[in-house]
Amino acid sequence: MDGIFIINKEENCTSHDIVYKIKKEFNEKVGHTGTLDPMATGVLPILIGKGTLCSKYLINHDKIYETVIQLGQKTDTADIEGKIIEEKNVEESCFNKEYIEKVLKTFLGEQEQVPPIYSAIKVKGKKLYEYARKGEKVEIEPRKIKIYDIELLKINKLKKQITLKVSCSKGTYIRSLCEDIAKKLGTVGYMCFLNRLKVGDFDIENSITLKELLEQKSDKNFLGKYLISIEKLFKYNKEIVLEEQKIKHFLNGVKLTAKNSDGIYRIYKKEDNNKIFLGIGIVENNLLKRDIII
Image 1 (cartoon, one colour):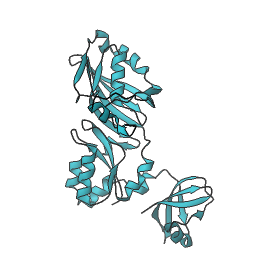
Image 2 (cartoon, rainbow, N blue to C red; image 1 turned 90 degrees about the vertical axis):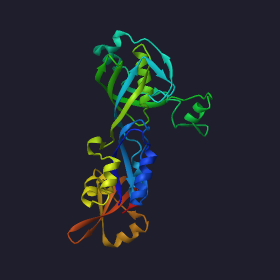
Image 3 (cartoon, rainbow, N blue to C red; image 1 turned 120 degrees about the vertical axis):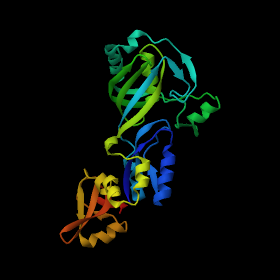
Image 4 (cartoon, rainbow, N blue to C red; image 1 turned 30 degrees about the vertical axis):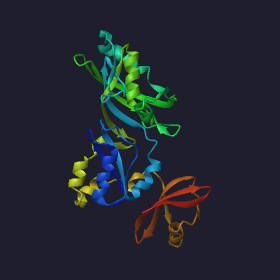
């Protein structure tokens, strides 16, 4: 089985847990395109079989999240799992729709963001959270990100919470964004809920839970419905149909002359009146080389 499942991750499990359980049940190579925190839920693309070879094409995707900011308190991890390290009054203006939306607009576009200290980014060979756990200070370099849109979904004055929908680039830390928004509103805050709605073209509407996948692992119709094949993954890429005498050379890794422009192509062979998908090839400087073979 080769391709991608869109898993709707549940709360309080790690991305590694999901990879391990699927690998154990299907006895295939399994990977993912980027972790979700244990407290987070939502879209987690899981690569299986030769689908794991596609990971290099899936790491730069934009993302969409739903998140809730708890106002008035700051934690050491910037999320609900941390210890409260600061409390601050929440002014009435923080619950004014027009004021909140005005503040949110200031976060749109390209900007530099300082990642949270409790993150897996490496500095001098160590992950940031390793420094944090030991109480060691470390300089954290800001990273360039882009916020495409922030939509205010809900205001809960009683709980001192606001709910947002955020569309952003790869590398954006929603925890840091929540802290920064709270600060600009004139208070402090932390991320108390995170649900990833979309990663690139992978939408939560087409996802399944880990439980559903494992319960239906022997149902070919179910697997066929939810497994995104490598061919389908590259459906927007152009195709090249190889002549019979070139197929063996291509499969053996021999570079073939190609008049096509540089890029990634779906590769097929003709069989009677049908086209059989062979895999993915890359054209560079008028030479076609194999990349992923099915």
